[in-house]
Image 1: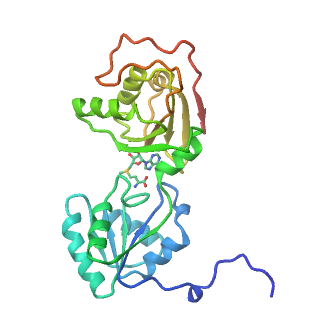
Image 2 (image 1 turned 90 degrees about the vertical axis):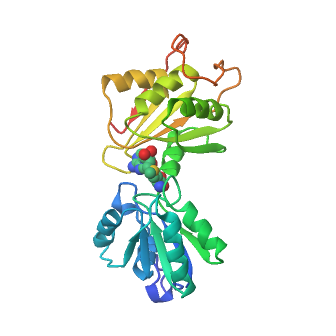
Image 3 (image 1 turned 45 degrees about the vertical axis):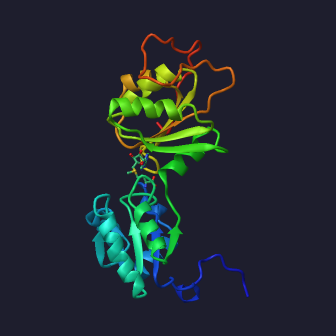
Amino acid sequence: MPETTSSPPPSALPPLAKGTLYLVATPIGNLEDITLRAIRTLRECDLVAAEDTRRSGQLLRHLGISKRMISCFAHNERRRADEVVSLLRTGGIVALVSDAGTPGISDPGERLARCVLEAGFRVESVPGPCALVSALTASGLPTGEFHFIGFLPTKSGQRSRRLGEILRLPGTLVIYESPYRVEKLLVELASLVPQRAVVMARELTKRHEEYLRGTAETLLQVWKERPRKGEFVVMIAPALEGDKEMECTSAPETELASPESEESVIADGE
Ligand code: SAM
């Protein structure tokens, strides 16, 4: 028999497991990033629970899939969990998708998964795109130990307390930040950790994907010359031994000196 590299015919694949909640990762920009398994799960499940049914409906249409959908977002996740568990009890198969990326990562999914497990049913992950993993692995920063922070609080007191906590952690820090607060975050970092390398990953997997590398101060200069739009992951290198950093307990203080030698900003993908 000649060797073949094509995927096995659908009949050779194990069927989806009854009474299971599948957490299905979907593209974060580039539609080619959907996996074969994600497509099959969406095609063969009984119900798709979606953060936004209109948005996921477009993805399903693009894939040529027509499926019953319900919404599942932060404010109805608990109630939806009861409905999902009822369906699983009858042997139903449910796929959860978020607007983009991996459900449960700064998106609905955690609570639903917990409720399903507590009710004694299976939860399976159908892995795929996740902004955190894409950004970190291409950042050039240490990947051996990292801390995923998700979104920082927006209220200033909570935010500066949280920054104080996380900047003491070892390993690379990975933060999801709104485009409206990226500049604010750079100002905070330039003051709190002026010597650390910072990488901003923007518009991952999309046409204008780029990585901006430098210190917070140099990135701030670049930002002021040309503010960017789109989605961002901001990563902060671990502190190097001997780095002098301010006690990260309070809001940024402007009198702090900028780094002695300013690293130039390296922008990929421009
Ligand atoms: N569940 C998603 C995941 O697996 O990454 C994250 C959803 S969270 C609501 C959205 C945030 O993820 C954005 O504000 C941004 O920080 C980050 N993000 C999502 N897509 C991105 C992209 N294409 N490029 C850069 N950051 C992205």
